[in-house]
Structures are given as structure tokens and as C-alpha cells.
Image 1 (cartoon, rainbow, N blue to C red):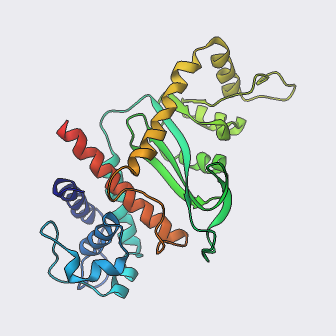
Image 2 (cartoon, rainbow, N blue to C red):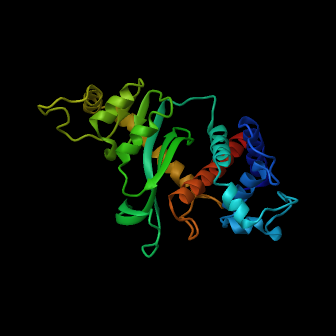
Image 3 (tube, helix red, strand yellow):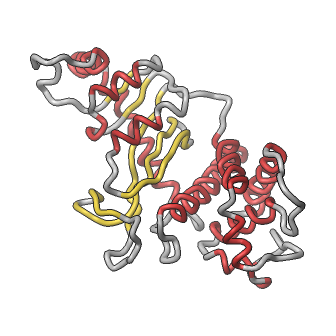
Length: 286
């Protein structure tokens, strides 16, 4: 990340610090410093202990005082620091211009088969089974992650989708692959005035059991050819996942020190912050 991108992130950290009230006695190391140190380690793909060494900094960011490794590890897990990280992401991903199409999908985050991580589970990944976690993301057409969740790899994508679609305001279309073909999910999305669109079998809607009206509507859209040009936009989430990993400091495979679900969730949150900061600076430059 360049100096401009880092200044954008730091400005949002300071802004988030003013949103959440402080409680308890005054701390020696502020929450702004703790959150900044953690993101400094994340952007450089280093563990938190690296951010507590004096020689880990340059002219872009050089704190005067540094906490111990145990202090940084303990403080970044506090509720207020977690709230600040989430707030920074929400501010960076916010946009005044809505897009009519949203896309939902999952991205496997695989760990080594010899890992002793008890939270990592076996599930479907690229070309077969693997062990690890999955990033579930609901993405706008312009590449912004509007809602997300990290779960073990064996968790159903449909179940997570049911939670994600209730976190944001959907517009006209929600696109997903065949894993999201479920009548109850069609109904849930329809309640928000949005049409879910997934690939459907040729006999969709021809059974004798009750069918979701929204799913029947999607089957008719596929039958008349109106769904095909809209569904082509689903590739936007593949570009989003690709862009998250296509630069230094992006969301690459999980490093060896990022294990257990809370650490993976916090690491992915940091990477999404960096991704959206880069997205904003590139669009500002354009």
C-alpha cells in the first residue's frame, strides 16, 4: 500500500475512534495506536509481534511508543477495537451510488492438512475437498463488499446467505451460483423487493409440491431469455475475489500464524480494509 492509501486508512481509524465512547481509565496506549499497529502488520503480511519492533516502521508510519506483544494481542481483541475495525471497513466500502445488481458467493481459505487448528473443518474447495475456512461475501456490482462472514469450510452457503441478505438493503437483482438455489432463500430475498437469480434445472417449477413464487418467477425469466444477460454480471464477484489478492498485502492464502476462527476473522477484516482503501484511492485517481 502506498502512502496515500495508508493515510486514507489512518484517517478512517481516527474517525472511528470518535464514534465509540471510551470507558474505564485512560489507557497508556490508545485504541487508535492498537488498531493502527494491527493493520500495519496485516498490510505487510507479518504477525503482531513484528509490529512491536522499532525497526518495523518507516517514514509513512513511525509511532513514538510501542506496546508489548501481549498488550497488543490482548487489546486488539477488545470489543471497542473490533468495533473500530468494522467501522473503518464500513466507511471505506460505503458509496453514494447504489448498483442495481449484487452478487453473493464464497471463497475458500485453505489451511495445510497437517494443521492442528481445531476450528478449521473439511469441505468443498476448488476441485475437491480441503480443510480450512470460507469467506462468504455479498458484493456490489462495482466490487465493494457490502456484507461478509467467515465460517469453517463445512458451513452451508445457503445458511450464511440467509444472514447476509438481511444485513444490507438489496436493490433489483441478487445473483448467485447453484449453491444458493433454495425456495426459502428466494422468498427471503423477495421480501426485500429484490429478485434472486441462480441457475435452475430444466424442470424447475414443474413439480407437484408448493414452489416459491420468486423461484417460479426466476424460472420464467430463464425460459424467456431475460435472465441470461443479467446473470453475466455474476463474474463481478470473481473479479472482486481476484482483485483482493492481486497486490502486495492483499488477501493471499492464510499465513501460518493465522489460525482459529477469531484470528482468521480479524485477519480477513484487515485485508478487506486494505482492499477497499486501495479501491478508493484508485477511483479517486481516475
